Length: 347
Ligand SMILES: Nc1ncnc2c1ncn2[C@@H]1O[C@H](COP(=O)(O)OP(=O)(O)OP(=O)(O)O)[C@@H](O)[C@H]1O
Ligand SMILES: [Mg+2]
Image (cartoon, rainbow, N blue to C red; front, side, top):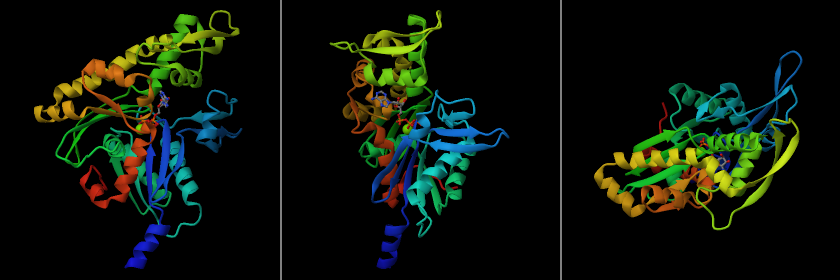
């Protein structure tokens, strides 16, 4: 028995996958995170219309917006839904194979955290992709639960905890108590919408056309949710909408704050509405425990302060918010009892 268990532990390489709309992370049981790449696939279409995968992950993301006519850089999952099933499957298989190589002693068990609110059809497709890639069994976990576990919250306690995961496609708000999701809300306003708001703003304010990549860079480099004591600034290059020429303008953190104001307010409103729906006993717990932020959006400058001013509660940013969901999914994989208690389904 001991040997058997050991063999499994050593060679089956059970996996936890955070299948995010912006980033996909793969964690190998007992080894930690081994893949952390953008959820992007570059596909080449030949003259017969045949499609071929050219690149996946980082390499593919670098091609976004720069591809010649016969190459498409696809983000197969958008706004928290699977926009392209086939390419999503290709991507999942690519990364599972990359981790496993050819040395698969026994088929792995895989826990996958999927965007919250996927349809049954989408969930089934994700499971099938992992099965096709060689999984022995596939479990799905809901993102707010994985985020809460990954943020180190005591999810099994009879004590309410509130987590807000701001990813690329969706913001998920979940209240967790006794190992279950008591209350949750998902809105399709997250990192991608912030980027789009920045693109729109720059276009209106400066007549400057910029791509998604540049908008995201601005958000990360100088974006802020609150007024900063010392403004940040940078130069941004793009095409002048009127003259058609390539030019550059100076942009400040205050511009980006203004650009992101509306979508950030919508995230704050969503949090507020969950707080308003909360059963009184749990509300008391949240007042005590505060709110934890995970996902890449948690890294927006001053977002904790902004949300705290809005809902009048303490707001904390999880350690390594971009890794929280993957870590939580990994913990679920490790702890079988946790696996059975939390919101898994294996239909
Ligand atoms: N330092 C930063 N400041 C602001 N935003 C950031 C920062 N770093 C990453 N992001 C944003 O975080 C988002 C990606 O976060 P994350 O990896 O948690 O999303 P995801 O899990 O792939 O998406 P989802 O959970 O919606 O499916 C992107 O929109 C990215 O621009
Ligand atoms: Mg996510």
